[in-house]
Image (spheres, rainbow, N blue to C red):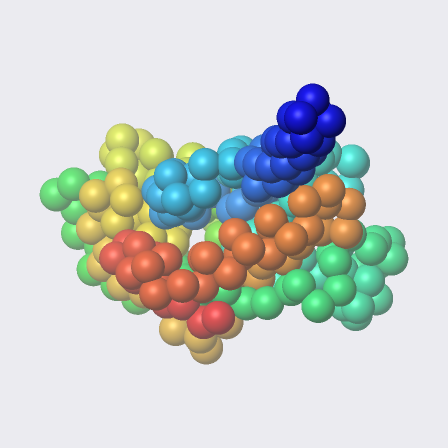
Length: 273
């Protein structure tokens, strides 16, 4: 009888240990670090919170900034599981499979077969409340800049929205250097800084993404065509140094779901994944 009880106790202890191991694995905590373009701040924060509510073992930490700044931070060794850029250039600069003309340093940070295009945005001409300068289109902006009667806010040259703006100025035959020297341009280190200048009526208008205009409650008077500045495509990828590859892939899969698409579309993004 004593032997039987001892065997039963041993069996119970074994089962408890096995169950404990299973529970530990199921509840293993994962922290994902996501570097994403500043223009995604509102949408990704909302989606991240929803995802964490459905996956209690996952904590998502976001770092929002200009894509150029994020690229530099990754290159310098910052911990990052997922990178979502507002332009192909910054992702290409980290992707060994990209052209050497862009990835000039031969950087190899992107995990193979995880990169894809997730969203498209529009480059918008936005104005402060009431539109005091009465700017109604990019043609109006061109005329105002040529006359020296308009103050435009744009992103720095290392920021995707700034690079798109440079293409728009070139499309209209305008010299950014001459306009800056004439005091017709102010700059922001990321799209949120440009948006703030417009919202505070510190400028007559600003060139930002239509999603940022929506989030800030700003009026969009015109959007740029692909001929003016190309398409605004956001690539996403898991990084090679990620310690949470499967969890990172799962979150990116979630960002392509119907539920995520609805959040993106509500503010003006167009899902392309």
